[in-house]
Amino acid sequence: MFNNIAEKTDWTNENTLDDKLGHGTFVAGLIASSKNCLGLAPDAELHIFRVFTNAQVSYTSWFLDAFNYAILKKIDVLNLSIGGPDFMDFPFVDKVWELTANHVILVSAIGNDGPLYGTLNNPADQMDVIGVGGINFEDQIAKFSSRGMTGWELPAGYGRVKPDIVTYGSAVRGPSTTGGCRTLSGTSVASPVVAGVVALLASGLRHRAGIINPASMKQGLMASARRLPGINMFEQGAGKIDLVRAYQILSVYVPQASLFPSYLDLTECQYMWPYCTQPLYHGSIPVIVNVTILNGMGVVGRILDKPQWFPYTPHNGEYLEISLSYPDNGILWPWSGYLAVHISVSEAASDWSGTVQGHIELTVESPPQQRSTVRLAVKANIIPTPPRHKRILWDQYHNLRYPQGYFPRDNLKMKNDPLDWNGDHIHTNFKDMYQHLRNIGFYIEVLGRAYTCFDARHYGVLLVVDPEEEYHREEIEKMKRDVEQNGLAVIILADWYNTTVMKKIKFYDENTRQWWLPETGGSNIPALNSLLSPHGIQLSDHVYEGGIRLGDRSLVYASGTSIRQFPASGTLVGATLNDQGKSIIEQSGSKVFEEANVPFLGLYTAVMTSSSNNNNNASHNSNKHMGGGGG
Image 1 (cartoon, rainbow, N blue to C red):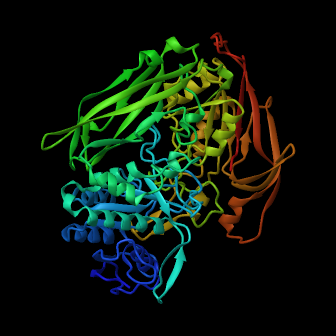
Image 2 (cartoon, helix red, strand yellow; image 1 turned 90 degrees about the horizontal axis):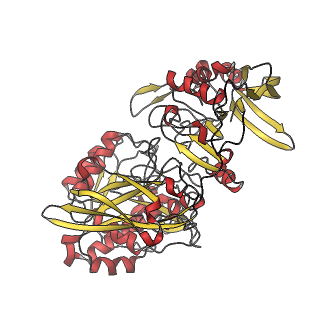
Image 3 (spheres, rainbow, N blue to C red; image 1 turned 180 degrees about the vertical axis):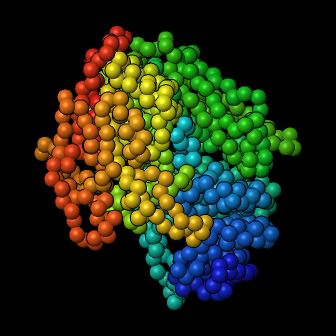
């Protein structure tokens, strides 16, 4: 089946080289099979590392040992058809950096958790790694393919674009352990397709071996990729891989720095989603675009001086206010870094509409003295500042997720995936909510800092969804003032919290050899109760689930709380729900504990103590405050 297997090593505790699952054989075959289902680089020298048991169990320590051996053997290309959500497994992440710093070109599957956003896997989400998504043979993104944005930067920042590229990963033919061919789907399949392309390119460019490195290969693949129409960059990256074009580009490649995205056209839909779905306006929280810097000149580089913004005066570029952030001291390692572009609109354009343009320029230096200057074109639409009642502020600051800790899934019925790791962001797992609000005319901004950092007079609604973080005393006091004096409306979608249930869903993690107990429930209800206490609202520690009706709509209420205390002047809505917490605690199996008239939704208008709504954008003089369960 394979022409050139240099070595097979086992890093597990099973002391066998047999591939009883067939996954590794299939993956290796896509790269270098020489019979039947021909691989892309059949003469490539294969070093096969067995890091999973036949029960599909692996540990970080096994990977670290295998990675160290790969560095020792001076492997050229390493395919990882694996991944997971833990980008804070620092020994693993650091070792991946060490691999690429030692000139190993690392290709990795982006994950099979699509079509939900915010489902990128590590290490494919790292800047120095070629992260690969999957498409079908109709050149559409495969439903299973994970998609952006990265979660490392939340809550204060904004994620990077991933995957980097896409290729065929649906119903791909490869070798079977029993002989012949079979088909398999997944980004585990797409990744070795790219690894095979990389091996073929590297072997075809041996006369230019000095310029081939993890950054230059990634630059060549992304610059040559074919963009798929109607698909945004957080699904396809640079586009579909094109081997021939990549070879042509790398054949004449000169070591240089590059950016991805290579330009910022915030008017271009669908590719520049979500930026293209909402114009800019004065007074908004800055829009952040996180650009990846690739440095093909060397493993270490630095940004010289300070990147500069050049507004195009004929195109009203002076209406944009640009601030930039990048790694400390401008250091780029290994082979890569980031440039976070913070975009605001000047006060001079508060009543203006039109299109603005300009560019950002920066220079990267790598030893020995090599320099490369790159430009990032910027284009955006500006509109007059919308009225207050059209502006919604999304609270991102109080949303915590795995891997920052064991934060459990909101829906307790999802037992196969107990971790809440999708970000709870309007551009990840709340993408559909965001799009609905935009379609009906609202403007949504993301708050990545504490409540003390925004002016409530500019917003109609603060939207708080499944918060896990604590609230500082200053935040609670400011919220009371904002509601009672500044007319801010607050919508809270809470989830469940019960300490006994939390103990019931603990599990033993073999990797860390520790019992994992949730940091909080689906929401931090005690913290929410502290926030709501000045208004006489309290949520319970009961956990309910079931079906509810609001008007003519039937909804699923999945693992939510109930309202325990509410002002007499408010309105409560109840429904017959099942006590899910009791079922879990008593381990009752299929038995349900039905409870009538459970208050799950509350509407309350606060009494204004003084009027602060005298700005031009104010549209109402009172506040509607919702406290309720979610799910």
